[in-house]
Image (cartoon, rainbow, N blue to C red):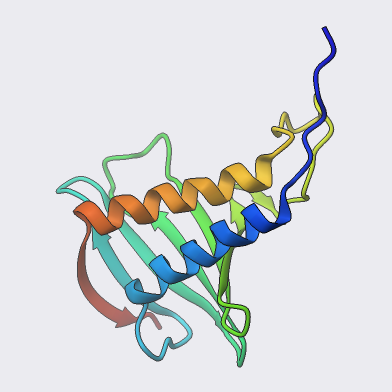
Length: 144
């Protein structure tokens, strides 16, 4: 049986990044500041910290990580780059992996899926949907 090769669909991917941008932007402060943190509670045990890592004229980079101490074995963490001129949000780091390519050969050394870039951005979409349904924004602070 011949397995088909994954071919990325750029319009679909850009649409996903546009929807992620529209869903993430309301969670952020109106004027983000470097080091600023805010917290999203999805339940008593699941509190996520959003930290502003970079602020530039056309971009903002935010780190999203589970900050609950109860989850010692797996701490989900990813960085999202927001492109304000294009109104797109893209995951640029997940766990320890930086910058995703459009298509990975399979199998590969990192065991990334052929559509890993799309899947990691769909994870952001799912997390944002969960925030919209169950999330409660807590307080905001600027870390020193």
